[in-house]
Image (cartoon, rainbow, N blue to C red; front, side, top):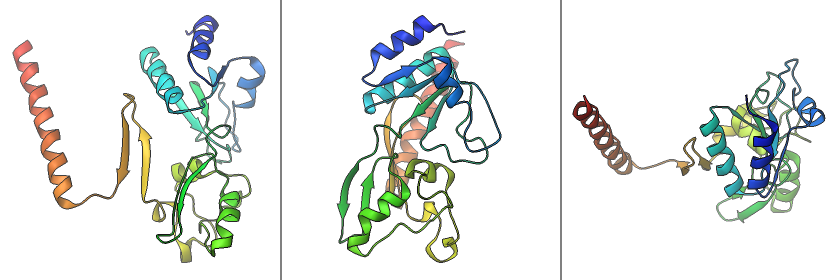
Length: 206
């Protein structure tokens, strides 16, 4: 059991907030679904460093992190008894836009309809249109691979994703994107080397 004193220390260690009062925990105990689970706390990270601090804390204390944006999911995807990580408050920027390549880089807290308002002057739009498009956010759409009534023509969310900058459970920053065959072979060889090194270490221990 993690005490409030420990959670208060976590709060002081990040630029954002970690709240664990009954009101905030109750508000985040459910989403748009019928499911309900009281979380340990609710975090509002402000930057990547905050996210890595939360990941390290969760790993050290063997608890879960539940990423959340708008909470419009209908199957309880962003409900859990760990720390709810709400990125809808501070991760709301459009980082860059390339009109020529028709690509845009943004943070997960951008509302889908707000994105299309930004794109409209350029004659562009983001196709997948869920029924909650005026409040659902891009992070959640990517996580759910959201679609909508026009997905038959314009595709689902995964069809629009070029790359994802993410943080793994060990705090490593990575970029997921399409790679060439030669790059795949190179990475595969590195992984195999690490596996054999690990096996060798096991045998030397025993």
